[in-house]
Every structure is written in C-alpha cells, then in structure tokens.
Image 1 (spheres, rainbow, N blue to C red):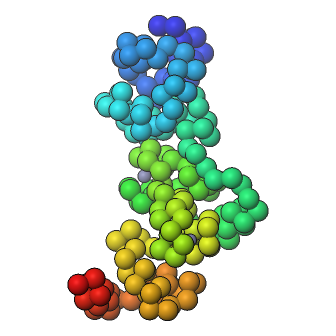
Image 2 (tube, rainbow, N blue to C red):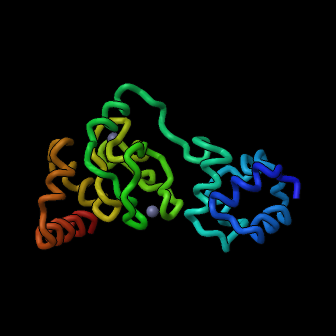
Length: 186
Ligand SMILES: [Zn+2]
Ligand SMILES: [Zn+2]
C-alpha cells in the first residue's frame, strides 16, 4: 500500500472499502497519479468490475477531475446553450437527475456513464454530446428517431422544426413515417 494516509482516507470517504483499496494496489494502482493512467470511469470499472459505478465516478472525479469527462471547448455559443437549457438534465442511462452545475459531457453521479452520450447530427453529420449539434445548432433527437429525422430533412422540413415535429408526433404518425422511409429505401 503506497497511498498516503490522506489519500487512503479520501478514497474510503469516496466509498471504497479497505479490501477494494488492497485490490487497487494489487492491480498496480498505488498513487493518485495512477488513476490518470486509468483515464476514465469506464476503464476503472473494467479493471475493478466489482466496484460500484457511482463510487468509481466519485473516485475518478477526485483523482483525475475534468480530464475523466472530456468536455467541449467552452465557446460562448455552448456556454449560452448551457444557460438556455434551464430545464433539468436526466441521465439517458439511469434517468437520474443531474446536479445543478451539470455541464455537457459530465458523468452521471448515479451510474458513472456519460449522462448525455455523444450523438450524430441528422442535419450536418457532425457529432457531439449534449442537446444541440455544435456544428449547426440542430437539436438532437433520440437515437431511435435518427432515421426519421433524416427523412424529415429530405422532405424539406426546416432544421429548427425537426426535433419539435418528432416530439409532437404520436406513435401512429411515426409508424407511417417509418413505412414511408422503408418504401424509399426499398
Ligand atoms: Zn446515470
Ligand atoms: Zn448538425
């Protein structure tokens, strides 16, 4: 065990058991800097599968900080969008409500995954995290509706209307759009 007493106490405060501290030492994690080698929460969970994801997220946040969660350059545009999206952010994996200071790219404190995974833009084919495309500003749609969004684009629906149109559609309307899409693709 090469962690300093303080580091051990911090790790225990983050939720690690003494046994898990020994496991970390056994796989070669013996100092705070070794967590940077691990790099991110997902990798920590790969080498320590028994670890609670929430604990893993807290440990990585302490040890590596923002580096564990790559976030976009804080352009004034993205900063503005963060302020604009005043409504609460929920994790797409476990539905946990994200903290008030949530920023795009942050890991969910509940499950340790990226609360908002990187998405592809149906409009300009850029990809990125968050609610809006950083390439063209289009609002992302759920992955399952990506093709529908592409179809709406082809049909001439304006960029700013696509996400809104999809949200307003009921299942029957989506189904009929799907069948049109299948006809187009053969
Ligand atoms: Zn989550
Ligand atoms: Zn785009």
